Amino acid sequence: MNCTSKIASSARVVKAPAPRASARNVVARASANQDQVSRRASLGFLAGAAALGLNANPSLAAYGEAANVFGSKSGNFTGFTPYEGDGYSLLIPAKWNPSKEKDFPGTDLRYEDNFDAVNNLVVTINPTSKSKITDFGGQDAFLNEISYILGNSAMATGFESKSEGGFKANTVAAASILGTSVRKDKEGKEYYTYEILTRTADGDEGGRHQLIAATVSKGNLYIIKIQAGDKRWFKGAKTECLGTWESFTVV
Image (tube, rainbow, N blue to C red):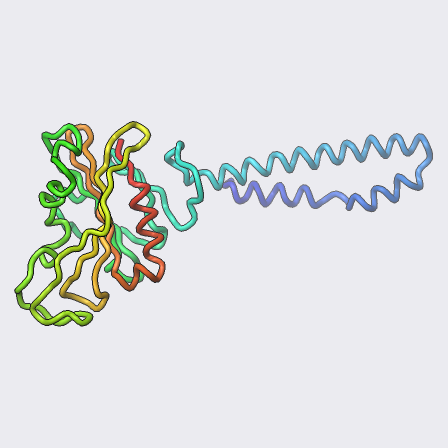
């Protein structure tokens, strides 16, 4: 029997006894002895109903908390699905689906929006001799080293392409860094994070928002890249992408 069945069963038992208002009318017409008996019976009924109620609540709580696979994480998981990978965890937008594409070397996980594949996320794991992310140098130096993750079209100009969203043909604007930061998790592990806007030569989105977080753990470089089309970004994708980006944690 699953949790839903248990809850439904408890609800039927609680509703079965007569309404309390009817019980009070019976008590009012009873004699002194009967009154005492009725009071004891009423108290017994209320205690039983309370016990059933207490039994139902933990079932509801357990059913709702089953998604909290990370234990220490708390908050509202509405709209996200918790995921535990090989040495990392994150929250994935609930309406995104797994994808078999391998965009980059070391791709361990890829999901994309079931409405528009321009919105997607990729997690890569690659061996490294570095012991921590700061061993790669500053954030600018590290971004230059992993520039391939933004796509070649975002890092070059002067090649043949069609016009997109007002951009001239055969030209593509370079990536624009909107923000960078270094954050630490509760274990003190440092992450390089980036928010970047790239202009691409395909589609009609006008650009791509790219959220990146990277860290080193146990001889591996972990990188998550979340992408959303510029138009989708302002139509709800921003909340999904930021939720995933901020939840990314490496053991």
